Image (cartoon, rainbow, N blue to C red; front, side, top):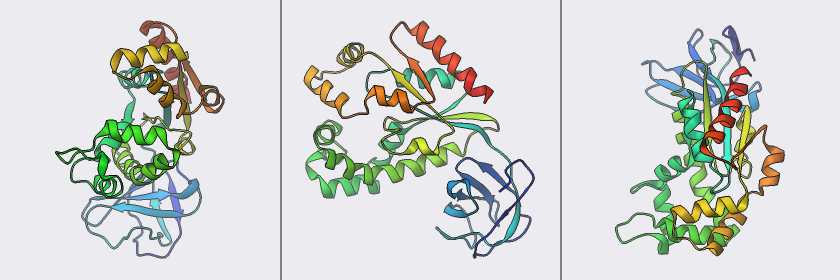
Length: 273
């Protein structure tokens, strides 16, 4: 399928008209429905099959429907989708902040996760039904209690992820659709490799820091004991493995000035891709 601003063909079996103008980003196609509101299609494995994942406004599309034979005009919206990760205390958020200052659209998976379990959300309702003990008196999620369950039990973590991750992906896709033409989009994802989100990225960046430095940073900003900190670190991907999997590695073992310099160097490389 062509994605260079010319015409592209798509095949399937639902209703669609020729000549509908769309924009293409790395998550799929942004298509105008009859009233001009955007409908979003996903490009499955960047192959020949297109599937709709959401639609705003009126139209005959439905979730999961294939697109009928048609010709659409497409254009690239964002330049690159980058996955950024790093263990707790490694400095991932600081790198994300610098990327944002350099011009990237940064999407924080933790922020999306907070929205996914906000009061009144479907996600919080499912959590309350499964683990009522982690719901505070005011009806909000007791994050400390939830964290204790998650970091102490792999099965619980997987069950929680099954509730939260689909919503996080949807919210991230909606935010990504706001990217400016030729803009780098950075997804800040703690479980980038573990969750498989790295497979959706054009490039991946891992922030690595020595264990003692990480523990010191976490203790400085929280009341967690060293034992709890080490448990949380152990529950995340081994930094050595993250280093092997990442396209780019940013070492955060010095000053903020050094970190910025290294981050800027990686951003230049990303911009040149």
